[in-house]
Amino acid sequence: MSATKETLLLVEDDVGLQKQVRWSLDSYEVLVAGDRESALAHVRRFEPPVVLLDLGLPPDQGGASEGLAALEQILALAPATKVIVVTGNQDRDNAVRAIGIGAYDFYQKPFEAEILSLIVGRAFRLHQLESENRRLLLRQDDSPMQGVITSDPQMLKVCRTLEKVAPSDATVLVRGDSGTGKELLARALHRLSTRAEKRFVAINCAAIPETLLESELFGYEKGAFTGATKQTIGKIEYAAGGTLFLDEIGDLPVALQPKLLRFLQERVVERLGGRGEIPVNVRVVCATHQNLAEHIEAGRFREDLYYRISEITIQIPPLRAREGDAALLAHAFLDKFGRQQGRSLRGFTQEALAAIENHAWPGNVREMENVIKRAVIMADGAQVSAADLGLSHSETAPAPLNLRQVRDEAERSAVTRALGRANGNIAQAAELLGISRPTLYDLLNRFGLKQQGKATSGGPA
Image 1 (spheres, rainbow, N blue to C red):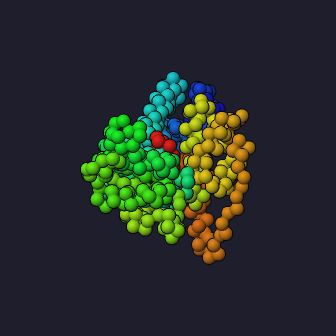
Image 2 (image 1 turned 60 degrees about the vertical axis):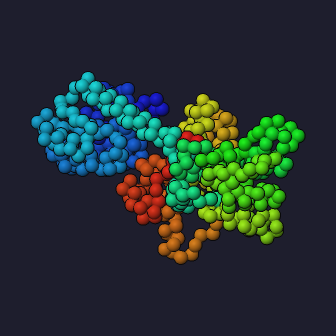
Image 3 (image 1 turned 30 degrees about the vertical axis):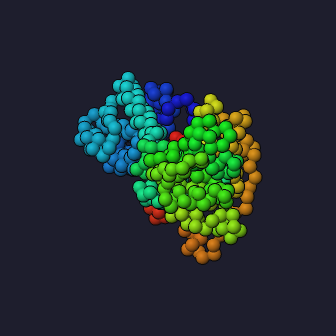
């Protein structure tokens, strides 16, 4: 199929009319189907923006029952598709019925190339406008979950937990391996809260030397130490009214832990060199990749501080445990870095997708981001290949033995993987699975899955 022409599906059993339409609409990539089943197969595989549908299809060439049934099924598979029905000159009633079902427009025989071209062109323009509108809605900057891309049940549960916790002022501890997107979820928590209009202030407890961290957090008065030439407020005060994010809280020096504990208990700070207590109203969110229970046992972290920062604990699963998300995120990063680098790459080869799905991703989303960015820069072909990624395969977990569980797990895994490979496109995922779109919707409901929760701003998690 042409990479430059728009795709039009012609559903017509008359060979002469097929040739005539192809000749008059040669500016489009015209797919041809002679009956309902082949038409539905083309819709599942290609999801064409516009369909030209003759209502008189076999085995009911003299009537419209087969064509109207095809119309209903096409719109069920691809609601955004613009279907133009073709009727006989004296068959206005069926044309009106088709419009009532959801057809975009109708065209009455005999064939007039100029009029048909105008109707088809208008349908393509409308489809393009509606598609662009949907893309703009997805890219809204005010989306609370911006950047969170997932179809995995565990991550969807995390998102639901965030939505429940956000309106409260409870202190939240976000746990997860390095690179899983802990700060991204902390920012989502802030945007979902009543403090969204105030500041989100982040500080990495592992990135600042111990000698400077206290003044960074609590601020200092003029003359508090050599070089303190003016009064400076700390990050806690700066975040007043908003959210303070303490990343890598497990690396907070033991000497500073009692002072942070007092702030969390009393909600007051005292600047270095100061005499007065300053009340601060701020939401605190912490994050760590470390096992704080082991730190407590080893005396490196105060138990009472742990209970203060973990009123609510949210665990982010590693990427290797998020079914379907590896391919889904890879598509998102390919789109992001393709735009940044000015590359128009057409997705991944099947070998590349297999490598993405089988890789263990020890560095999680951060590792994937680096891998895809490098692949976008280095790719020579029109698609990213497995060689461009440079990934190795990893072993999979042993499968369960119970036959019903095996079947359910296999179906659920296939659905989530297909959604990932198809970048969330239901029609393409159904084609990969060899099932109809309604059947896929039934499976999504059965397994409690959703279509990808996705927004494109702010970097995927």
